[in-house]
Length: 412
Image 1 (cartoon, rainbow, N blue to C red):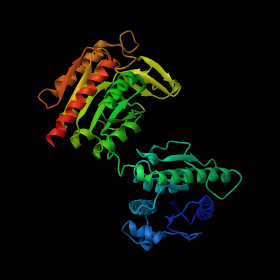
Image 2: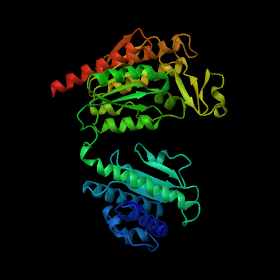
Image 3: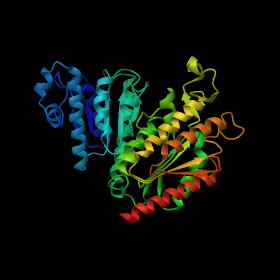
Image 4: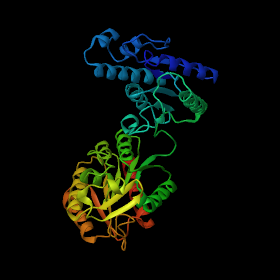
């Protein structure tokens, strides 16, 4: 599927369609333009896209709010792609554009299931693409120059995009018979796990144990987007259980770090009644950007350069106490089996005994606030005299989740 505004990008979309046909790919061209006349014929005209959004094109053209009209066409494009996907006609999506075209096309792409090839060639792709990608698997390609004609710079870039989507769509179509109809419908139950570089050893041990027990484990990097993706999928009920051992995004949310997943992190599994085992991995740190970007207010804290792009500081005793209260408040409202595994000897590689973030007083403030907040709730709390990266801790957490999943399955 080619999705774009054919009044402003018609020539370029016509070029893409011709190249894709030459590559042996069937093409359906969807027009999301509003005002000007299309410069190439569409297979799904703009009037049909508007109707898919529940309105008429004439009303959008006369609307005073241009932004609202664009949003409506994005909604129509989303409905159109979902219909084509349901009909089995969609094996990949390619779009090109600037900020407006990228917003329209990526909204439609984000609605498609994971695994469906999605490629966006955009002049916006060298900046923050999180609003466009969200928790989907969209591939962003920087156009270098604006999408304004076929020239010596844009032609090879667009040719690469054609080759990429043709290859991805072909592979997707050929593998269709072997692909589960939806995420979580495969032969092995899915478990989500959260991980950071500073909790890798413990989570790897848990993942290996769960794999031995017959699960497929999807690991999410707690990068903000990773946590939001975990929450989205947990809310959709695709996981048999969640092993949420790394919660650093909550520390970023509290302290103004750059990798927050927002205030709803650690909520979806509980709302959905999904069995969850939670730990406190990496709550001993907050992530900021490069060293020179650190706010003045944190320069007197324990500063550690994680890599050239990420600098971390140690969470304070007061911050740890507040994090304990926040974790407890979220878990108190869980509707499914919930356990918290507390590694008493440290929450990260930096927080291990002898490490730069080893601060037993701050850790105790976290543990104490968590215990007090969970008092009287259905969530169970278990102490382990280990570090979070001790393989024994990871295996114990995995075994506990396995037992909880078994109890839920037996009850069902």
